[in-house]
Length: 494
Image (cartoon, rainbow, N blue to C red; front, side, top):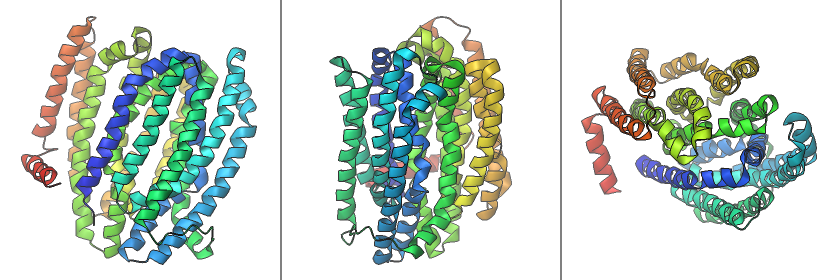
């Protein structure tokens, strides 16, 4: 089995690089496009993600079953899995392309209520991303092959290259006076380039791979039995992570999307670091489960749960304690004053999302994707009820509070997983209570220091308290001296 630490390091690099570039480029893009057009840009990209469920979960299915059959050295079966998945994704990709392309005007006028000054550009933007959707759904077949084979280094390099070319092209285009339409055209072009690269390296990893567009009914049944739950999970996930912007645009206008998206994006990117470094758990858990080593599964779960708690607390503390001075310097006072309260609420929710991600990957690796689906469904329904009640009354803050309701199924979700792995609930409860004590302390201290109006004092006290939160993580035993010593020796070895 490949090195989990090596995969985690590559995923961390793959996450940190675009975040750093994004931190420098986002303010420029926002100010060049203006809040209205940037809001259209966010909605256009969200449309592609909104229909991602149309792959019927076969992307996750590739990771699960290719890693499973690699453990059994059944490469003929792997080839059949990839070709069957490719046919399904091609059909559904064309279907999604047609939906977005021909509903562009309806979405702009009736759903998002775009101002007439920006109507033509929004319709054109939505039509362009329809082609991007088709390419993305085809890419998901080949991009998941390196992940399934636990070669995250290849996946990360290609993903970062494509993203970097897209973002740099956007900056150059805006500098020379071009706009949103040209940005999206270049985005689609680089997606095509990415598809070619992913296919080339998938072929190198699997020399037996032959694209034949040959559909096998038994393969479809095997993958679909797992992936349908992943697909349904994607639908409910999109309600929270994509449709939210559309609901905000409907009730509060396009510009409000920008004020919500900025803090949401910061929280999502920061906590995405955790998701990126532990996503190797799906193929790893699937591989270990295939050979029947239950004790090793339990050990991995306990270890990575502690690690994720530790990193989540540190990220939460940084966002809450240093969020306002960062927004003031990064994006400007006008957006910072409106967005910071939203940032605090959303960061709290993302803390719990992050610590539940270990469970998400374990459930998928164990072939229990239906539990992820049910949890996501309950959370999304709770969110939808809350969002329609709270946004009209409390506006952006109401949207952030509604986001909290996705956590409704969390206690049951974790309880089921601990039982599956024979992990004592008392251990997990103690870990959670320690974490809650730290984050509650951070929120109270933040409320006290943010009465200060001076930027330098905010940065000074925020940094001081952030350092304190890191010490508390070590003091409360989320990370031990033995963990640090082991990590150091393994990094040196790699």
